Length: 272
Image 1 (tube, rainbow, N blue to C red):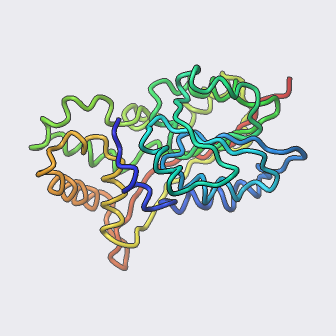
Image 2 (cartoon, rainbow, N blue to C red; image 1 turned 30 degrees about the vertical axis):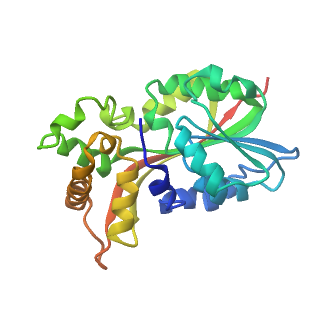
């Protein structure tokens, strides 16, 4: 997978419903309430915008905030643009236990924003999260199960761009491709051993401030784009944008709208 970290990082926290989850829902659920110093892990931190602007302010008693992403270019940009004395960025993959095992049983809180739907084996990811948390530790997770962005990418495969899809591999997340629903993930986390403290499915409508902002965000996370020749990238981006507008439309002010079905979870590892 090859994504544009700089373009993605230009918009620190792209989705309004993610901001609400961290700034309103989690405080109401007392997610960050703790009598001890917190050791927090952010899984799939990308270029660090959400780590710095959403996760860091959530905790008053923070000893350390570890933030990981499987893509080295994301970690490079996170360290460059969103550094903080309490944040430590590193390359790791939540599906690959050897890359995260050094934190086994040490994490008091774990967060993950728009990452776990990309896992090839989501259950393995949740099992590793369980192993990383201390007894009684909690995780707050949100991601899209369905998105017009993925519908648009799929639709473009049936066009002149088909040849560039051949070597991409999994260009759609498992959650979208296999139409996973909330009950699928609810059953999964219970089987792993978690207690579900909060679960919400939300049909989201996120308005972007300009066409450029919209194009830049979704171009930056489109895994197909890196396989398109340089001289055709702008054309591909514009057609992706047009397809998304077809599916998502614009609001009454003419601004582009992204629509998705997202899941929000707060889960707890039982005391042992």
